[in-house]
Length: 350
Length: 252
Ligand SMILES: Cc1ncc(C[n+]2csc(CCOP(=O)(O)OP(=O)(O)O)c2C)c(N)n1
Ligand code: SF4
Image (cartoon, rainbow over the protein chains, first blue to last red):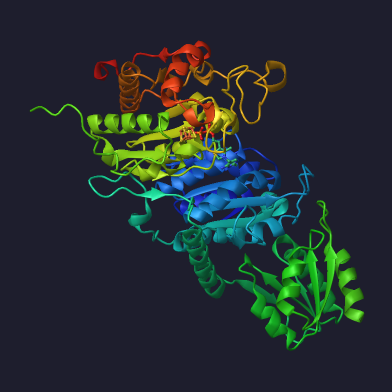
């Protein structure tokens, strides 16, 4: 396989098409426009590929809902404000148990905010985001290569659990260019029995989220929870970096973890024993590795490009087992490794 | 003996939950008649709305996919683009289609999506208890226009069919009523023709149905049928609004 230099947004689009995605609907918003444009250029060349520039993010996610029910591997993408609009549809996908991939290249917020890289949508992504008791699997790539790999994997996970999967990147992951080797997609494994394609001579089916009877609605909720519990058990992904003999461990995801690696390499050169745990799945959150690490190391620093959202999950996971401090840069600020290193040294001394 | 009337086979043998005299149940039967006559039960996929027809899948005996409130045309677009040889229709009330879902409806029509919309205009939000709809007539009372709809304060009743007919993507739009045997027969023919147009690839088709809601109009069933002719049809005149003339050979 050839190595090519490609932007994150393009790599995501290319990986999706290679993974067999044949339906894409989106609405322009920076910093993910290159993904929509890539799909416009390439999706209609793929066999049976559909590209629609929708009238809104709401329409786009509902087109994906229809396409997914009809059996297509389907995807939509946006950035923060547009992802807010998609929440009703994501909730419907989860309720109906339909697979779909939703990409969020986060930008600064709240409100219109700005178009710079940010990580302010962690709560929205990991807590369901829309209404009702549901979960989306959330994957956080830290490089263009990983974005391409996780995009392919997202479709498999969505099919396996019949659940929406979100790729949570940011303006930088989407727009930076890096070398990528596209992996080999796995053949699709999705039972025809879930596809709504007209009942033929057989029994008709309906796909719906409406369950008026309280006890049956409750049973559906518990059924979803049983599925989420399997996901939480089987699909946790994370990376550890230079944590052996560390005295302080940084927890960071996505592009913030890349910055953290730069800071850690510098600090290690000057004798500081620091390491990194990088959650790759934000939901399910890799709580166990944090608890295991806390048996050896008592000092954790959470670094996010937000005012502190994943911080809650770290505290929940550690449950008082270790000291947790926080360094955050919201609003589209991307701190340098040197800035982060300064913050780390302060906590390291304590 | 010749059988001249029967329950359509694509209509499940389940009692309707609709109020007595409601236009929804009549329209359901007309849709099933059309599906049976065209022999398309096995390739039809319907999209029910949020609204009084939210349980439509309990009655229609073909595949159905629920849409969030107002998103029927977007959901139907996703299905139809994925399965172009299926007959796909969305079924939507006036709040669903002409308020919260205006954008989805308008743009699906403008793209000329090859789908059919059955648009139930009962001039109120039925399911949520009789609030003002975009189609509520001027002066008409509702729970959110208690003194009557006021043009300067509440705006005007929207004639969606006429608006959509101006878009180049639409192929066939007709406004019908289900308040008399004659109108019911005509509405049935219109629905069949719309499906036929879709099967011929003509583009976006929409049948608006002036539909009695005796409960929220606070009338008897008989009164509501008369009210459609005497009052409602003055704002929403029935008839063909647009017909590009494709698929005519199949329609009667
Ligand atoms: C996002 C959202 N907003 C509001 C509702 C509540 N709701 C359900 S049906 C409906 C309107 C129904 O009116 P209409 O579309 O005219 O259909 P009818 O019931 O009269 O057939 C509303 C507002 C909802 N389900 N979802
Ligand atoms: S409230 Fe009106 S629209 Fe709804 S079922 Fe009753 S009569 Fe029909």
